[in-house]
Length: 305
Image (cartoon, rainbow, N blue to C red; front, side, top):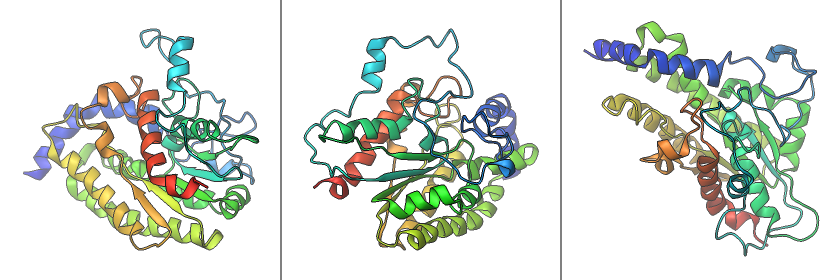
């Protein structure tokens, strides 16, 4: 019975998931950091990996139907978080963000760097003197295994060693890899089989951070469900997201310096408003702003003087 139900999912989601796989994952090994000297193959990546520059070009440009942002809208979307004007932030604070496209800021048409850019602007609005620069190592399409390889590279490892806070988004592409590899015969057991490996790699990510910087507080940002609007009659999709988040929470609970930041509730009932219209998967500027607000709420005790 489950097999039949999942075959129905495949038929219903064929066009939609094809769009996602094309625009979101591409090839998992492909590079999305806009560097002209970098080849598309991750194995040919330069030895020293640089943080993603704040001014970047997304793989796809907004369509005419989507429209362009006026200067007024740009100011709203890239403005500091409301209610955060009176933080007393450490001036020499160093934050490092690592992970996938949510860290990179894919879907943010203001090219402000998604939640990382909004968080950076908010912190800088509360200090005098030299600006805080959040080092952004987000890479579109990254899975846990790929992030682990990147964490071995000198540039990212050095940044983590010197960090006061590390922010992480990872896991969505591990889940989507299951869809890609089992597209014609997808069933719930395929996701369950991947969970053990995902949990193991999350542990390795936490251990690598603590190996590089034993005292740094670090935060794993949870997953949200972009499918609920389109497949609300298929509860297994929600269950899968819940289980991926459960694994993240359980792994984090085993490390004193780690904290889990849930964001699933932010998007419930708000997908139309908070998702990027080009792929209906990544957050848009408003979605990233909500993520930034949640992250700021949780890290506030660590960043204040």
